[in-house]
Image 1: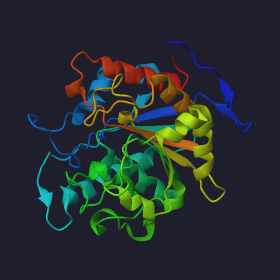
Image 2: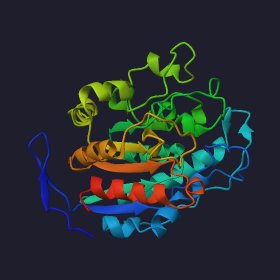
Image 3: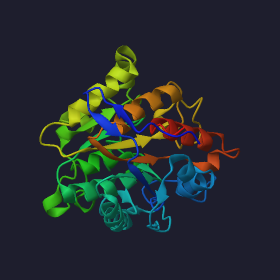
Image 4: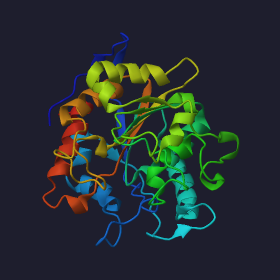
Length: 319
C-alpha cells in the first residue's frame, strides 16, 4: 500500500493533515428502508459492509473498524401510519446508529459509514445534529426527495434527503429539539441525473424547498473539480460547524458500477468521483462520509467492490 502524503493544501489555502484517523462503521447495512426486486429474498446492499471488509477496505485505508450496529430484520410491509416500509424499525435503528457515530466524532477522526441503503443517512445526520449545525453534500444519482404519496416503492431509501431536511412523516422527521436534522439551505444535491420531466418527477417536492442543487449536466459544464469546490462552499458557511458527505455509488455510470439497485448509464466516471471525493476529504470542513447502495449480490466477481475500494483509497490519498 502506498503511503499518503503528510499534508496537502486545499483550494482555500489551508493545510490538511492527511493522516486523520479513519473510523469505519460496518454496522450500517440497513435494508428496512429498501424494497426487493423480483427474485430477491432481501436487498443485497445489506451485505455491503462485510463484503467490502473482506476485500480489504480497512487495510487499504489504514482504518480501524468500529462497533457493529446490527440492522433489523428485513420486512417488506409498508407501515400504514406513515406510508413507509418498516418505519418504526428505521426510527429505532437510526437512533442506535446515531449513538455509534457520535462515539466516533472525536478530534482527529473521520467517521466513514459503510451502508447499506441510503436511509442510513438519518443516523449520522442525527449524530451530527446533536453536536450542532452541519452541512450536507448529497452526492447521488438521485435527489431522494420522494414522499410517501409520490414514492412507488415506499422505501425510505428514496426519501432520505427529504426526511433529514424535515419533510415526511413525523416518525422519521421529528427529532424534537434536533428537528430538522439538516437545514434545507445547508444541503445540496450534487450529481443527480434522474430528472427528465419536472411535471412527473416523483421527487419534485424538492423544488419547493431551499435545498440547493447541482445536477450532472451542470457538473459537465463546469468540470468536476470546479463544481466540487463550489458545492462545498455552498454548504460550509460561517454558521455551519462542518460538512458531511453522502456518497451513493449509483452516481457512477452503470458501465463502471453496475452493482446498484437502480443502474443507469450516463453517470460520473470513476476518475471524476475520485476527483470530487479527494477535494472534499482533504478539506478540514468535511468531518465524515457515508457510502451506500453497493450491492454485492449484483457483483459476483467482486469487480465493482474492488473498484469502490480503489475509489475510496484514491480519494483519501492512500493508494
